[in-house]
Amino acid sequence: MNTICTNCKSDKIVSGVRVTDLGEGNAKFDLSLETYKKPKAFLFKGAKRYTIKANVCCSCGKVETYIENPEELWAENQKNKLRLQ
Ligand SMILES: [Zn+2]
Image (tube, rainbow, N blue to C red; front, side, top):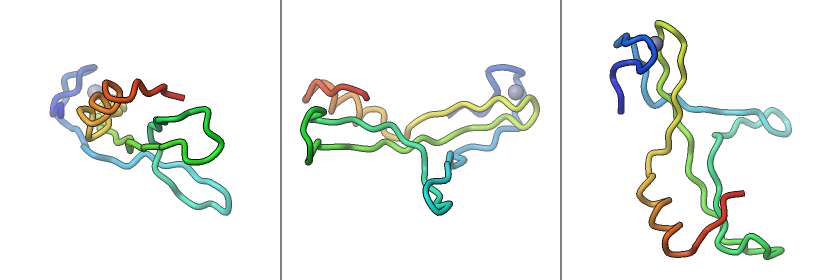
């Protein structure tokens, strides 16, 4: 992960911050990428989630998001020809 901001070159970076939203009843959940092995299936779509995290520059406020397991997403994509929806 970057320890220097790509925008302002500051090293005031806070890494691995959770990116959340509030759902029904203010339940907090992490934003994530989601892929499906069978996107058209009614049930059992084979969903897989990749939690989004963020690095934040505390000098200029730039937020950079990432997933921790990109190789896994790539491997899944190669294996199953996933569609991101
Ligand atoms: Zn910055």
